[in-house]
Length: 416
Image 1 (tube, rainbow, N blue to C red):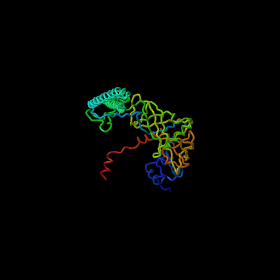
Image 2 (image 1 turned 180 degrees about the vertical axis):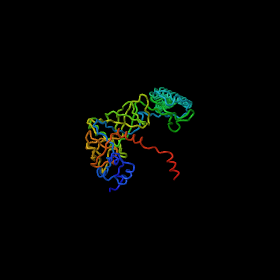
Image 3 (image 1 turned 60 degrees about the vertical axis):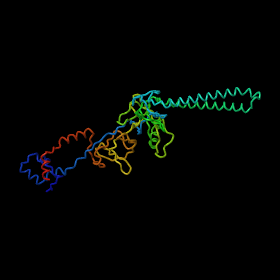
């Protein structure tokens, strides 16, 4: 008599052994005896091979891209400051709008400077009048000195007075010019064309006292610059890949990826590479330039710059979830034509998103396991499924799973 176990007893198989002609009384006896004769014929039931999801390795031209994180900035961020001490009388622009070079922005109180200009003009007139007198004295004394009618000292004093008078005139003219320049600073105009930001002062505020006061900032937006600090390792890796393709990194077009994940419509170009690596951070500073005619890009935005290096040879790309790492080496599970799994070491290349390029260890057309890696055993058979078959099986299993009756949950809760 064969002991009855869960592994060896199969009620349906017992029915098929007897052709389905068992009476109700015989069913109980068959269950008790374990149907020894049938078990001798069939043998112990074996577990089916584990189900795994596989994908086929395909060779394709994989675009290799390198991304750098950085920030946008304007080629010109011009701070408009008050250059004289005065009160703000008017604000002559709309905040956040485009201004042209020379457009009036602020009007400062001119009255104190106009008074200073009038005083400077008066000093200039006095200096000119004194110089005129000194020159006439020289003209009168020079012939007398030639006839020795007066001492030579008197003529020398008159000539010295003329020189002093000329110096006084020059000083007075300089004061007039200085006050005139300060008076012109009361009309604050846009030094460059661009987008002006918010005002930093209000009408009636005293500006320019002690130091130039910031009034507003103007930024040019077309083109706009992208700055990034690239590590020395990333820079060398990108240069090496470019050299392999016979190109230079600075000659490659740059794609700008904005903070929301979208790509900017216009490609850019590298325009600046710093002369040295920063010893404190181990990075080198790069700058790319992008056209920005619609003024969508603004200074201060964070973005990523992508450089695409297209590989000329076919590459094998596999999902990273298909990889296993052991003692610093990478492996994949390969399913052969005999539906048996075998572990194979591979040499990896560049990561492309959620996938990675395999340089050695695989061939195009082979199948690798991407789901159910823990079920695979060396040389053991598996039941491979494609991604579509895997999804269909999961959907059928979800439909066939019995729904839990609410009353069962209530009864369980009440028993607890």
